[in-house]
Length: 139
Image 1: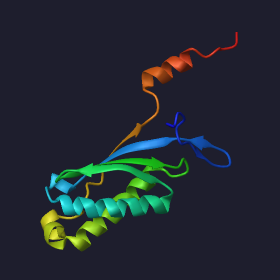
Image 2 (image 1 turned 45 degrees about the horizontal axis):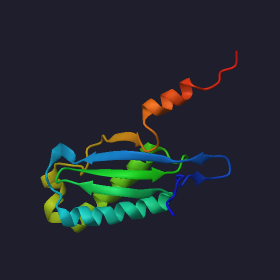
Image 3 (image 1 turned 120 degrees about the vertical axis):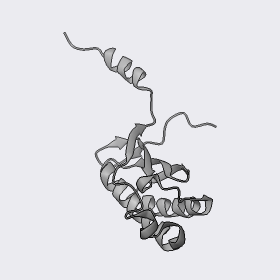
Image 4 (image 1 turned 135 degrees about the vertical axis):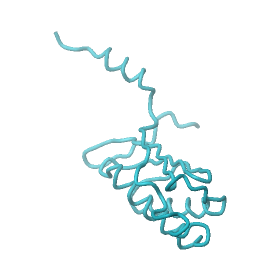
């Protein structure tokens, strides 16, 4: 039998279903990643997410960036999630693939200091707006 209700995260005082689509880009858009690096990076990211009470739902990437879909708890700020994910993945990449991404070739940090984040999942915004508009406001 198929699930009809989303798997909400329940805690003492909240019920949530939070997803974020994150994109991390290598410094100067350097094309350093290959399939093996992305596979190892995914393992590292899953471990970090588990430690933070989050879940890496989907992962993929190209030579100069990667996309993550992360389900996360409401008490975890996106900025902290990103900081931990970027830090751990950069350490893994540099340690395991020193020849491809050493600091001299990368000219400093592995990732750019910026990131892209957008909320994801749930109903489209147009449906949510319509739902809110149709509430029975008291007169």
